[in-house]
Every structure is written in structure tokens, then in C-alpha cells.
Amino acid sequence: MTYKIAVLPGDGIGPETIRETLRVLDIAARAFGFSYEADHYPFGGNAIDTHGDPFPAHVRTAVKRADAVLKGAVGGPQWDAGDVRPEMGLLALRAELEVFANVRPVRRWTTRTSSPLKPELAEGIDMVIIRELTGGLYFGPKELDDDHGLDTCAYTRPEVERIARRGFELARQRRGKLCSVDKQNVLSSSKHWRAVVLDVARDYPDVEVTHQLVDSMAMKLVEQPAAYDVIVTENMFGDILSDLAASVGGGIGLAPSSSLGAGRPGLYEAIHGSAPDIAGTGQANPTATILSASMMLRDLGETAAADAIESSVIRLLDEGPVTPDLGGSATTDEFGSAVARAVQTAAEVISR
Image (cartoon, rainbow, N blue to C red; front, side, top):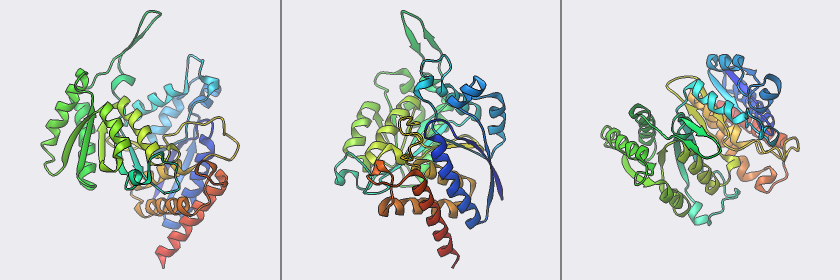
């Protein structure tokens, strides 16, 4: 089987983490009997520089023809003051692919991570945050002038239903618990959100459903993060809470994600930024992008390869070498090479 992967290397450390991820994918493909074609396209700040558009027309066409999209981080201070920003391309990409479900697993991947929590609180963290990705404040009507700014948060019943069902289906495959997060004591959009989630819950009597207000949820993620299984929430709340959860789980540098719609292609990316301050220094941690590629392979049906990559990363995070953000001295290249070798070894063990 040959998969068409549209690769968007991005800006800052994006190309570096993508390079190491493709190194790992090359080994996994040979070892587990599949192949892929990786076509690289400009996106984000670099596309603004070369095309005047963070998401050029030819890239829009290409990503929709792919089986999956693998993206590096985008953005940087050199584009902050411009009328066209890299983040505009990201919102347009999500809308173009119609990927409405952003899936962000949060685990304590290793005890060597920099979780700010006491070990007893961090122990057992294993949740998935499903963030609605194509609605809410980020996509609603906007107004801005010298006297006021306005962003509109609106959700339709179908939008809430489809993201809620993603959450319930995933909860069925995991520990059978779903928490829906809103702000229904204040916001009309959240009152609507909760009502629709309650309606959908009737179809999943085997899933335990709870509700939390977003401010309370932020507190719960710090005080008892291991208590949660699947969390479903709207776009902005999910953006904020998933970064908080990643931090308590051990650091945003380890946090992968997938963004999924009704079919292919899915979008796979680390949730961290482009870190321009360390770009080109060899200090970037490619873990989150590599784990995102593992999620990509799992969604494509290459489960054995996905498992090998994930287990190899976990072992290396425990045993080293690791990058400076985790207290080690390994370079981006050294860590990526170590993961690739571990994947090869894992494949050889399986074939015996």
C-alpha cells in the first residue's frame, strides 16, 4: 500500500521536527511493508514570503488529494506585524479539509518529563481532549474598529452533535467516561452545547457522562488530571485546556494531535509553536511530531508500525538520549536517529 502524504514543513523548528519524523517513517515503512510518497509544500510564514499567501492555491488543491497531511509548526516574529499572518493559513487549512475534531491525547509519557505537578498527582494521566475545530469564536463573524471589537461564538446542532458523537465513540473504546466542558451558566452558545450533548448521550447509555464549566475544568486538570478519560469541548476552550493538560502531563514538547473530519485526509501536527529562538540550533524536540505521525499511521490502518513508533519513543524518553528541554544533551538529529533505530529493532523482534 502506498500513501500520499502532503508535508507542510512550516517555520522555525517545523522543518527540523518534520525531517526527523520522515526519517522515522522511512524506517517504519521498510520494516512494516508499506510505502508512502511525501510531497513538500510551502505553508505558513515561508509561503507568505514566497507566494504572499500562507496557504497558496496550489497547496489547497494538493492537500485535498492526499491521504494525510503532516504539518510542522508555523509562525514567527517576522510576520507578527503583517496584514497577512501564518495563523490565517492554519485556520483556512482546517476549514478546507473540514477537519472538525481535533484529537489531543495527553499522557505522562515518562517520569523524566517536566510536569509541574507532584508525582502522585501526575501518576496515571491518560486522557484525550477532543476540541471542536471549525466553529465557535475563531470562525464566527468579527468586527473591529477604534471603538470596539466583536467576535461571535455560534454553534449549530449538527456541529455539536458530530463532535459529541466522536467523543462518545472514543469513550466506548477507552474507559467509558466522557466529560463535556462548557460555560452554560453564562453563555447561550454553551447552553445550546450542553443541551445537544445531553440529547446525544441518550444513544450511549454505556458511557458515563459528566459536565464541567470551563473555569472549574482548568482547576480539575491541575488537581486531579488522572480522573479524566475523554473530554469534549468547543474550539477556544479546547485550545486553552489542551495546552494546560499537555503541561501537567509533562510538557507541550511531547504533545501530538490529529485533526479529523468525515473522511480523509486527516491533519497531523504537534501542538507546540515554531520556537524561532532555538530554530537551527539542534535543540528542538521532535517527539510530538513523531507521535503525531504515529497517530497518522494508526488512522491509515498501519497499526503495527504505529505501535512500534510509540513504544520506541516511550522507551527512549525513559532511557535516553533526550533533548535539552527534558534535561538531556541529545540533538534533534540524535534523538530522531535513535527513534528510527529503535523502530527497526522493534520490527525485527516482531518478525522473529
